[in-house]
Amino acid sequence: MSTSSHIARRAFLGATGSLLLPQAHAQSGPVEGKAPNMIIHSRRPEDYEMPLDGFLQAITPVESFYVRSHHYTPQVDLERYSLHVGGEVAAPYSINLRDLKKLPRVELVGVMECAGNGRSFYAPKVPGLQWTNGSVGNARWAGVRLADVLKTANLKATARHIMLDGADVAIGTMPKFQRSIPIKKAIDPDTMLAYEMNGKPLTPSHGFPLRVVVPGWGGDCWVKWLTGIQVLDHEFDGFFMKTGYRHPGKGVPPGSTVDPAQMKPIESVHVKSVIATPRDNATMGQGTGRIAGAAWSGEVPLAKVEVSLDGGRSWSLARLTSSNGKWGWQTWDYAWNATPGVYKIMARATDANGYAQPAEQEWNPSGYLWNVIQTVRVEVMPMSAAAYTNSCLGCHNEDLIRGQKLTRAQWEREVDKMMRWGAQVPGDQKTGLIDYLTTKFKP
Ligand SMILES: Nc1nc2c(c(=O)[nH]1)N[C@H]1C(S)=C(S)[C@@H](COP(=O)(O)O)O[C@H]1N2
Ligand SMILES: [Mo]
Image 1: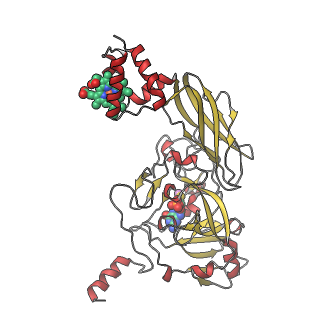
Image 2 (image 1 turned 90 degrees about the horizontal axis):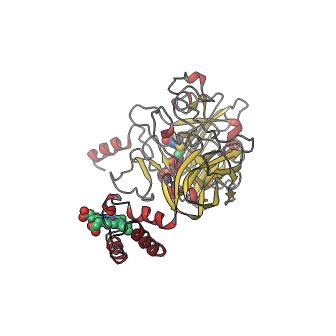
Image 3 (image 1 turned 180 degrees about the vertical axis):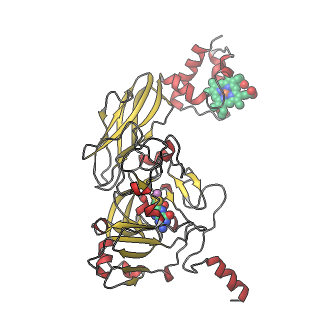
């Protein structure tokens, strides 16, 4: 290697001169490896949100799974990769992925939700990524028990917290993303170091080659690109423990400030449900309708999901349609006979302690743990009126149509022309639509 390229390469490797290379990213268009309809909050660093239709799937495909990274995605080279275990242990050691995989393999379906999911709904606004509903996903994780990895190092009696460190390098002078979890949760047999997500090696965005899986707890504990485990005799005191990811434990007056010392690190997420269909402000035809979505909980299991069609006055049980175990989310649906009218549809999940999603926000300074009952407004119309609204009022308003007083034959030709121009009219609704237009706008 020539001297100049050697210098360039050192600069490229950054201060740590370690395992990683920054990833190049396109500035527009779909993100490689991600679904084209992902909501892109930021490309550098990577912050992508799953769109609403993701809540119809029992397992979230990796391409639809949200991404939340404080720093640039590191490209970890497996040949140079190792995990170091040290701190309050009798036998510190380093291990490569091949040897780590010799420990017993464990698997579970687990939902991971960013503590900031739903932040955009808080009023007044709080700074931070403005997630709507989709910084959450449900995957099948496979790896080894964190307890097994710790056992090999022989924990000292002083061990209290496990600090988790990844290969990502902090941007500028911002603090590094490092978190610690209490020993009790760390040695829970369900807490894992995962090398697979949905049956495939982790992708770089999701933490290749190894990440922490902390079932029921906020995504901030699920450290990606794991390279270091430091056993501590105290809670880690870095920025992302003492300042970031802290919650007052209850709602506080909206807009107020709270001293971080009065707050605690976020652990379990709260029970929550999201309605994937119908969409807010949708128009639908009368008849059998489907309300569906997903619901989950944190440490306390999900007990039930109920649906209201009348803005929360009455509730009926929804049917759970998946069996994703203790830590996964459950898809749910509810069939209803929709008659014309305007509906305020709601879904409310309750956990096994009887705690139900609240109707009002529990405001907190960083906008964490949003789980207010979601409402979608839906207008149900006679089939033909719904076809008219959905097929004909997307490109122009009714005023363009109202002025025409046409015969049935003329409306038929008009509809054909609009379909050539891009109007989407379901085949079984075309005749009804033409009848509707002829009655409503006759000569
Ligand atoms: N090393 C590292 N791990 C990390 C993060 C990070 O920025 N760096 N982000 C955390 C946060 S806040 C969340 S919500 C999850 C997101 O995981 P995902 O990108 O696989 O969805 O990873 C966590 N693990
Ligand atoms: Mo997060």
